[in-house]
Amino acid sequence: MSKIDFKDKVVIITGAGGGLGRYYSLEFAKLGAKVVVNDLGGALDGQGGSSKAADVVVDEIKKNGGVAAADYNNVLDGDKIVETAVRNFGTVHVVINNAGILRDSSIKKMTEKDFKLVLDVHLNGAYAVTKAAWPYFQKQKYGRIVNTSSPAGLYGNFGQTNYSAAKSGLIGFAETLAKEGAKYNIKANTIAPLARSRMTESILPPPILEKLGAEKVAPLVLYLASAQDELTGKTFEVAAGFYAQIRWERSGGIIVKPDETFTAELVAKKFNEILDFDDSNKPELLKNQHPEMLNDYTSLTAAARELGPNDLSGAPT
Ligand code: NAI
Image 1 (cartoon, rainbow, N blue to C red):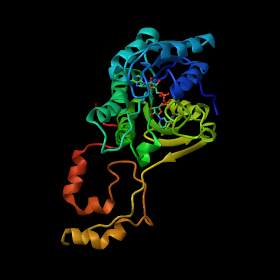
Image 2: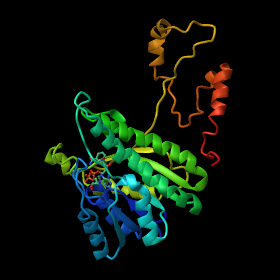
Image 3: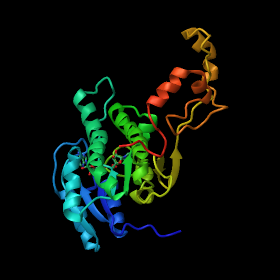
Image 4: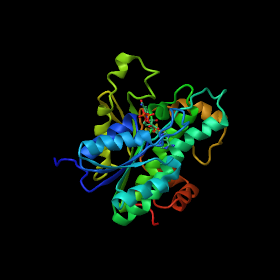
């Protein structure tokens, strides 16, 4: 197997002034990347800002003989972050959407501001940076995106409706980017990590934190950033040395024939069959509808056709 390196590659890492992003930056630089260290240097809840966070990491990279530029923009200004990459290094090849904040509270106490702000930083921020990088990716026929989801985005977590919604949104975002990017050699994948950082330091006990070093997450991010072949649109869980892929599983389901009566009672009667995973499948494409369903219902087939191509050949731009 050939060695993975990022020589001549320009890598933007958002939220790279601390925690996971800082560690990724140092590792990418060690492997030859020109790194844009983005961080607005705010508090865990997103308040405030300082250029110091990004500067310290850039200095560290340079001291190690690496190449890096600092960027202090909010991820919502993705175009400015990409501009920093282009101004310093001519283009961008890899985007690691990593910046994040927390504003936890139960739905009962959640404010609209806290809900929207968390969606803004995680989801809309990832959109803004990716959107600005996309034309460079398309033109050079090379682009790699790694989104950062969370176990809370996969399974939910008390007090984190805002965070969970943003984090699961990033999975769908990457799944579609993978399809749109396929013919341009643009690959998008997602990680759901658990790691020691200021996000977890006050929540998890020290013996567990000790096991959650960023050095155990970074190898997967580096690998995904160099993704080849069919490695796109996938989601991975990673923590404490555990690496695994997450995917959708659909129960075998039921087909209700057009001549049957469509009622809630019918669903109730067949509910155990709907929940039965004995004959399950693992769909990856929107058009992987139940074959019988598409055969039986011409209207559904037509609707599926209207949706256009949904396979890895990518849709026309
Ligand atoms: P962290 O708080 O150390 O790092 C996040 C960085 O993002 C901070 O340096 C912060 O200044 C920066 N940031 C926040 N808002 C920004 C904005 N609008 N624009 C630019 N930069 C901004 O936390 P950590 O743990 O390193 O988190 C990295 C990513 O991993 C986040 O997306 C987080 O949600 C995710 N994650 C972390 C987990 C963990 O166990 N640490 C668990 C699951 C997901």
